[in-house]
Length: 114
Image 1 (cartoon, rainbow, N blue to C red):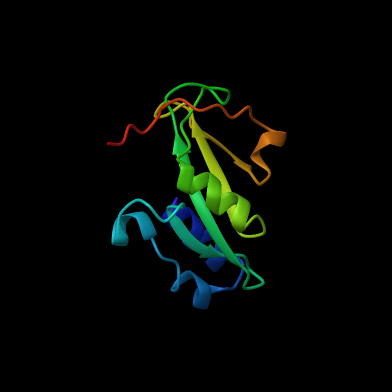
Image 2 (cartoon, rainbow, N blue to C red):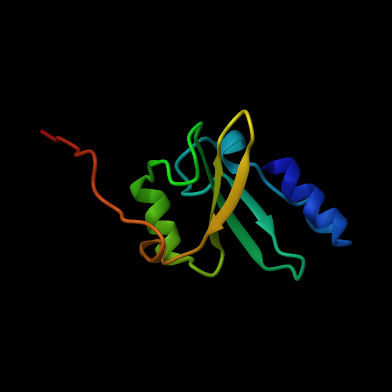
């Protein structure tokens, strides 16, 4: 998706912004609430969380608490890029907050503390 974002910005005459894209999860590790910091052609920041599955477009996927929190705190910037049917015939669509409009969210794990 990093290369996709770069190509998108270059195709929109924004090579300057393409050079600023950050693969956050690779450079700083998971935990930021998104994988890629990119930009729209008009310069607005985009925070992209990528979710990929081998199954079809309606296959369940997991969202972390931090990812959900960032989606709520930055709904204007945060996007979920949903890759599906990997690796055979990949498809892609985007979800934007509020996520509950498109998907049902349910807690699947619990933290146990002492």
